[in-house]
Amino acid sequence: MTTARAGLTYAAAVAAGAGLFFLSFGAIFTGSWPMQGLFLLGCAAVGAGAVRLGGVQPATAALMLTFPALFWLTWLFPASIPEAGLLRALLWPGLVALMGGLAWAGGRAVQWRRDLP
Image (cartoon, rainbow, N blue to C red; front, side, top):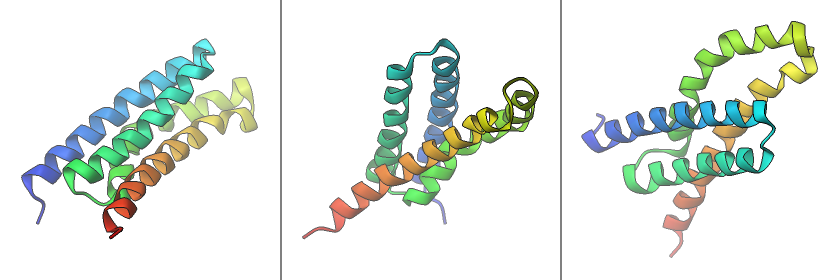
């Protein structure tokens, strides 16, 4: 059974994922790579916060963070192929996978730290 705290954490992770993907989208198109790095670190922070404050599992936090980006990928990836080519268009699914991986790693780090004596 999902608790209210976990439900609020899921909603916050989805909102943060939508915001971080949108900001990453803008950083890539403007060529602001330092900001892109900051937004990716934000994904790890969201994963860590979801596990620490919300008590959810790292994999669930990562899925909730990347969920909004999946809707963007349904049109962004195929639309990028004719203009940029397949290899460069793979940047978008790779970005979403990296966001999810960093969120999972941040959550797993908190979980690992909690399990230490």
